[in-house]
Length: 345
Image (cartoon, rainbow, N blue to C red; front, side):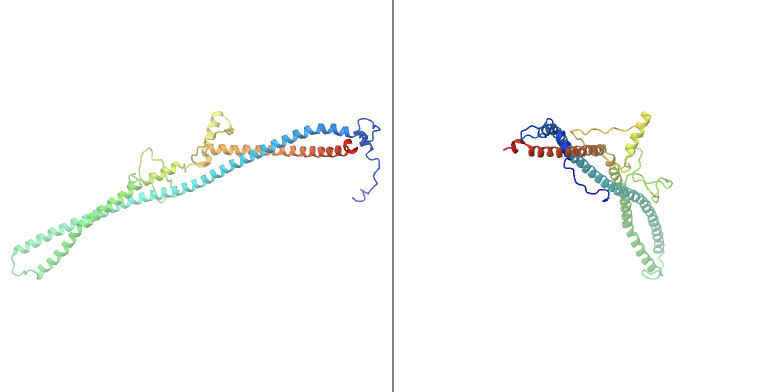
């Protein structure tokens, strides 16, 4: 490369034609006149309005880019906050689902516990009835012995002693009957209260296979076919339904788009609504399908797209402005250098 571009002396008249080109008239004998001064003045007058126009245009573009960038950042902050709210709502849904499923199991177990306590009550009642029969047999036997008036039967001795001991144990057993009955009734009451507080839904029949507590992927809040139930499970399901936990993201939009396509017979795209001066956000669940969030997302995408276009226009305007500024500065310096008023003082 060095051998191809060797140093050569510059022709002393290299700028002769350039000087002649900028002169509109032949030089006069006035020593203070300059043939390029008038041409540069005329060229400067042409460049200044163009430069001012480009300067104002680039300033307006810059202001618009700054405004849209600030607005875009606010939209982005709104989207981030709504996404965080959606994340928290899904975590709440998970907890509600877990509680609802467990409450179903508690309800089912309380039904089984009630059945077991009722069976236990029947068994205890049968035992107590047997004790009553034994007491009746004892009374009959004791009356038979005492009315016999046999001198060999001495109270506190022999068979009468054993009868007295048996009577004491029998009386002690009979005395516990009231406490046992009271406690078993209280247990039945508590088990039914637990079941009713969980859900007032009737316990499943023995041959009812609609609920399996060991089945995987239990649905927490199935439709109850219009039947109103009350209790803890109902409260949990009210919150579960309020958060629309069963609805996934884009489910509502997909259904709406599908129905719209069927009506129009083709693929349709909903236009983005222009952002109005008055914002009316409506926060419903799921937030990922919220109409306000979708509008803000649409505005965010539009601002990002506009910023790309405006940034390209701004960069072009800046290049043009810098080019004109360099030309204008050069002419200002050149005119100042050859200004006859300054040179001929």
